[in-house]
Length: 405
Ligand code: PMP
Ligand code: GLN
Image (tube, rainbow, N blue to C red; front, top):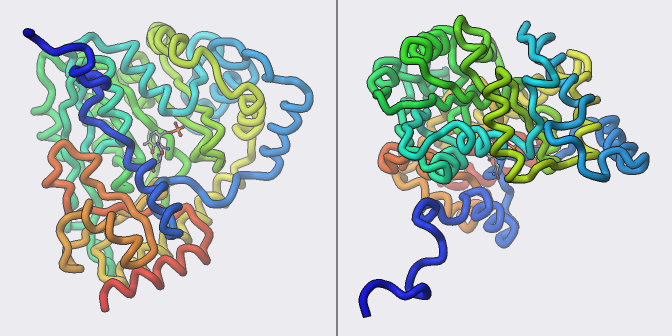
C-alpha cells in the first residue's frame, strides 16, 4: 500500500501541530493538582467592581442579552467603546461602522488575522509574543517573523537588577520584506512588562506608513501602566488611524477575565474584514455581559487611578520579593506580569524550573520560552503574575525565598 491511511494520518492538522496545549492550561492545572499558589496564568484572584457585577445580574434578570445580541455587538457597548477611545485618547470612531465587539481579545486577534491575511503573508510580531498570536497566524496560513525584545542594562533598577526589555528599531526595519502584510504589536507587553515609548511607537508608525503595512495592535493592558510610563495608542500617530486595528478587552481593565468581552476599533473597511471572519467564529457572545461592560466603560477616572495604584503596590511587593529570593527582576512598567532571569539562582532552563517549582516552593510560574521561536533566547526567563491579593503575594515570596537556601 502506498501513502498513509486516514488512521495513520495525525488527527491534528499540520498548521496546529506545533502548538499542543497552551502553557496557561498546563500550568493552572499543575497549580490546582499540587495546591500551589498560581502566579502563572494572568487572572486576578478578586473580581472587579461590585456594581459592574450587579449590572450583569440585572441584564440577565431583565432579559437583556439572553438571546443573540446583534452581530457587531449591542449599540450601548459600541457607543461606550467609542466614547472611551475619544475621552482617553482623542480618537474618534463611529460606533456603527468602526467598532466591533468580540469574544475577548483572543477572538479579536484571531478574527483580525483570519480576515486580513492571505496564505503566505508575513506577520512581523514582537518576541516574546503572547501565545495565541503564533497559533492565529498559523490558522490564517501566515508566516510569523519575530523581532526579539532584549533586556537593556542601561536602565537597570536599583536593588532588583534588570532593566527593561527594548525593541531594536533596526531589527524591526530589517524584518520587513516585500511579503510583509502586517505588524502585530502589543503594548503594554505581555510577558515582559515593557510599555513601548513614544519614540519606539513613532518608529513603528513611520515604518508602517513607509512600507504600506497594516498594523494590529493588542492594547488589552492599556490601563495597567505604572510610574512614568504612558500608554499611547498606535492609532494616534500620523497616518495610522486608517491602517490600524486596535484591540481592547474588558477582562484586564475591569478584572472579569471570564466574561470574555473584547473589541476592535478601526476604519470601516478593516472592521468589515475582521467582522467577516468573526461572524463565523462565534457570531456573537456574552450578551448580558455586554450590557455590564458598557456600564464599566463609563466608570469615572477615579476607578482607573485606584486600579493602577493597587496593581503598582502589588508589583512592588512581588518585584522586591523576587529580588530578595535571588531572581534578577526586569523592569515592569505595564501589564500585571514580571519577567525574571533565573540564572542568578544557578538555573538556566525555565521550563524545567517551572515544572519543578510547585514541588520545590509551592508556586507556579510561566516559562517565557513558550513565547519565543528562538527557545534558547527565552530559556532563562520566567514570568510571574502579580494580580493577586497582597497576602497571597507575601506568602508566595516567603516560599520562593526558600529556593536560595
Ligand atoms: N492579549 C494579551 C497580550 C493577553 O495577555 C491576553 C490575555 N489576557 C489576551 C490578549 C486575551 O484577552 P481576552 O481574555 O480578552 O481574550
Ligand atoms: N492572558 C493571560 C496570560 O497571559 C492568560 C490567558 C489565557 O489563559 N489564554 O497569562
